[in-house]
Amino acid sequence: MGILLALLLFSFIVIVHELGHFLLAKKNGIDVSEFSLGMGPRILSFERGGTRYSWKLLPFGGSCMMGEDEIDDQSAGSFNSKSVWARISVIAAGPVFNFILAFIFAVILVAWVGYDPAVADDVIPGSAAEEAGLQKGDVIVKMNHKDINLWREVQVYNQMHQGETVTVTYERDGKEHHVDIKPRMDEETGMYLLGLTGKAQNEKADGLKALQYGAYEVKYWICTTLDGLKMLVTGKVGLDQMAGPVGIVNLVDDTYEAAKPAGMAIVFLNLMNIGILLSANLGVMNLLPIPALDGGRLVFLILEVIRGKRIAPEKEGMVHFAGFVLLFGLMILILFNDVKNLFL
Image 1: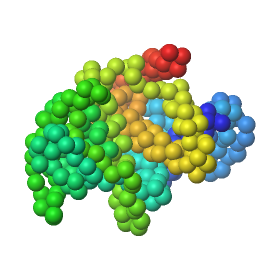
Image 2: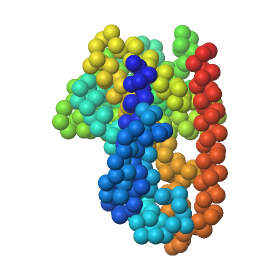
Image 3: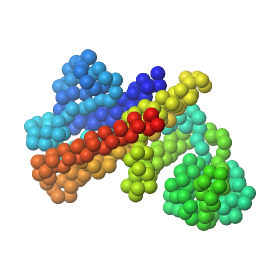
Image 4: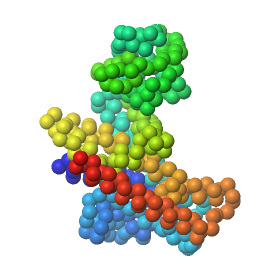
């Protein structure tokens, strides 16, 4: 059951991504030959308005076929016959729809279970935080130059900057204070800790606060994804620590099995939380300036805006093909690591 839920969840997120491309393509008068749910051979399909809508055999993913790879096609209704800004809006719509979906999920989740405020609920005696003068009830608003809105951001920042002195900006009695804290090694955990703990219980949110903290939730996952990519590029983590499709399915399955005894409502909330992560992650990854991804296509379109003319179609096609080959190889490597980690 957990594996099926993982496939359905990931498929829904991919379909929303493709729906963004589809709706903006239609709005800009671009012909969409097919919009499909799933992959593989068709089970059911019908045609309307020049588009074939298909339900395919394999219940994951989806696609929106609008001819963006047919670079030489300048016929009426083709993707490449439209203005550069129309093409930019169509390509950007996929990731934007992922961020919108993540926000909707986040607002529902925050309205249901609340949020973790960036408030120090306790200061460990003898810790670096106590020595720096922090007290229970202080609101953490910045760590160095990074805005802090959730307690998890305090924890993640410390984890990603182990042992580094951090300038903490906090509020107390309506006044803002700044202090430098050098985390101390905790022998039990082997980590450098500030010596602060957050509230054990979430704070309730409704109305505008649910919208506000829903946005903070999405920001948290976007920043976490970017921080992870930065650590990958700088060599702080390896490719073997990245999770691919198998790892994601395993995560959802484990989450389902752990939450199942508490009832379907808890299962739903946990899956929604993973949905926020996956949707925000997919949005970020697709905006990376890598050929064959949406971000790579946007780079060529932005260059077209700057230059006032298109890059030679054959050159752009070669770059995207090379990017596709590179991404395919990377996916094989990540899939191999997924399977290896599954059995180790």
